[in-house]
Length: 276
Image 1 (spheres, one colour):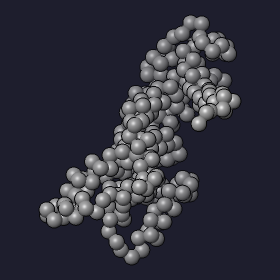
Image 2 (cartoon, rainbow, N blue to C red; image 1 turned 30 degrees about the vertical axis):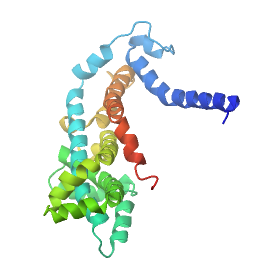
Image 3 (cartoon, rainbow, N blue to C red; image 1 turned 45 degrees about the vertical axis):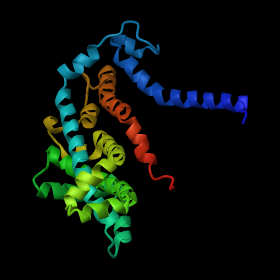
Image 4 (spheres, one colour; image 1 turned 90 degrees about the horizontal axis):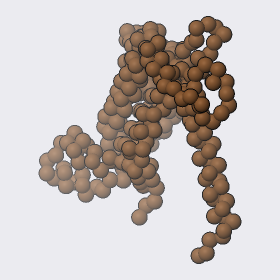
């Protein structure tokens, strides 16, 4: 079938427009982070004298390295606990038949739709009772409330589609439940685990409201809150260069993860979309 030249041209123009709209803010943040002094007020698309001073200052003048470590600890912990608990829940909900399974699935999905602010006061009381206030464990617990329903819901779909013959053969060989889940099913669920794990990591990495509410000291803050609290020498000064440098630094790990796992993400999100 011969392609219409106008449709091809329109496709490329639309693709270029989407790429420009998506990438220009990040490009402008990089350019602004390389400027200093009065050059920050310039609208040029490339700095006349690029400098890494803002990147050096963000680590020297702020405790940004510790904030990055905190975010990495919380996001990694959320991913590990989410996938571990989700695998167990997905097996029970996807492979075991029991009354009320559909209702339970709808309850799990509905939890992920609650706005964060609706749970804030209840979570605050729970975290204070557990003695976790102003600790990274509080953020991990709070983030799990939203990442767990999502990962369980996705993994149940994949777990349900696994061939029954594999499970029956494993049971005939006397394999236990945990061996069946983590040594037989887990390699088959690798694309789904990568896709859901990465989405959970991004959600925990960017989470702001819980991090602002449940931490008080600068030593326990994560990067979204640390960036929001960056201030200049006076109330009239906005450290735009530092803010842009910090924004670029926190974005780079997410881009790297997406590029590394892009093949698994696409296969994980599209697997099961078409039944044979």
